[in-house]
Image 1 (cartoon, rainbow, N blue to C red):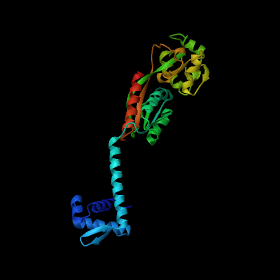
Image 2: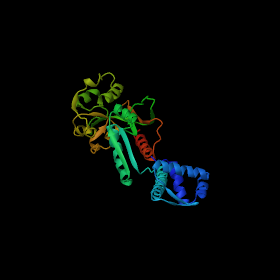
Image 3: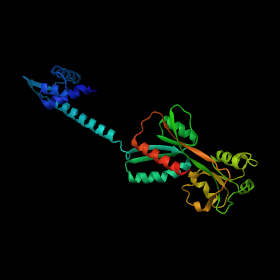
Length: 295
């Protein structure tokens, strides 16, 4: 690899056509310029100038090396411009979150990408363990999770909370008792046991004996499909509020009025010490705003 300092000295010498003027421009001595020239010629194994007394002309190799030096200068100027610009409308952002939050976030991401064709937003719906490991490994720029991680390489910012909703058919009771729920039957999904422990332990402490004792009508692992049987009168379910945000039949379900509302905290996580480009900061602000609206 060519020595960048020697190349810049030679490029300036070729531009000035004079050793003294090149030395003055580079704030060097004339012998220093000559030394850089000799070292560059030795590195290349080619003569770069042909001397004629105190004057000189470039050899064919010298013209090629001068053009390379000018090209590298232009590349460095372009690099500095790109770094200084840090355009929030350019580049890729990778976000991992729950399926419910993904449904809430994705329409806003699509609208943003429509306005910014150079922006790419990648979203993965994943369980909390995958989100944490993915942020640590650099697979994701940002993650949204429900429990604060205590890890020395992660930063965690509390961005809000969302209610855990007991979702019933639209004609169901506003405040059901536990026997009514058991008669209706649960539409289960991968996270329902945790939600049931939170919601039912607080609201039906004398009746609830664990998620394994709940009567199940069905099981669905696609979050967009979970409320569908409820909307058709088949069972009830438990979801965070974001899980209903994009449900197209929201008028066919109702959220029960519980005496002891329960909430999931929302934390935005990223790798500690990393300096984020503007596009990641922009998505982080959007995530925080959406999370705040769920309170």
